[in-house]
Image 1 (spheres, one colour):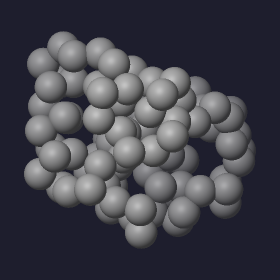
Image 2 (image 1 turned 30 degrees about the vertical axis):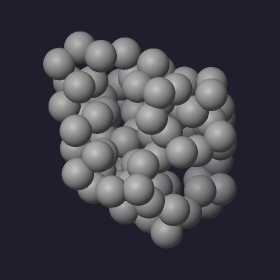
Image 3 (image 1 turned 90 degrees about the vertical axis):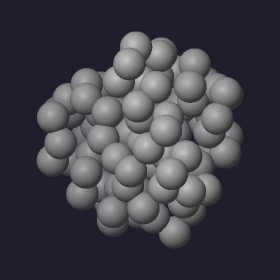
Length: 91
């Protein structure tokens, strides 16, 4: 199975929840990623491209391969911090 997703990585759950609220209130996910994400993918709006199951950490994979498409998910805690993620496609 292959998925395409974008994400935002921050250090705290509170920051993650604050950004999720902004997006739910109409802020653009990609712009929020550019302004806030500590991951290098933030520069491209959080776009992670396409990847197969097992390529990401287990906590991330579990959400990516089970959640509804085009809905912001999170906070998802991993060893890297707290993520918001949005799965844009899955095959």
